[in-house]
Image (cartoon, rainbow, N blue to C red):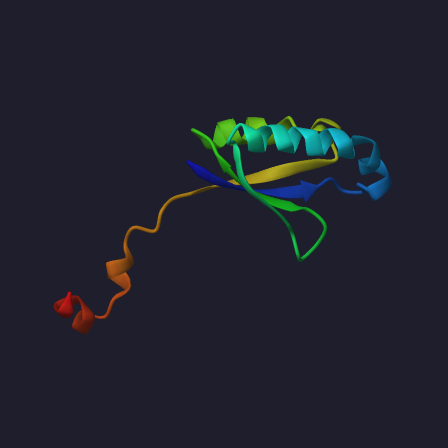
Length: 102
């Protein structure tokens, strides 16, 4: 299952509070990437942070994986985990005229 995970910084979290955890944070992300759990990871453009696509059996598995990030364990951020599925109903968007051509 593909799951979009968006980080949520803790209120009052500062770059100075993040700094001691960043090396461990990157190493944890790399381990998840190598194992196939993280499929894609991006820097957010609207604010500092990340958006990740995870491949897990369930939202609970994804939540457990992101809860193990050092910044999350330190209480400096959490994640919103959003399950995604393939868009399988394209034809419902086609006009009746097009459906007759197919």
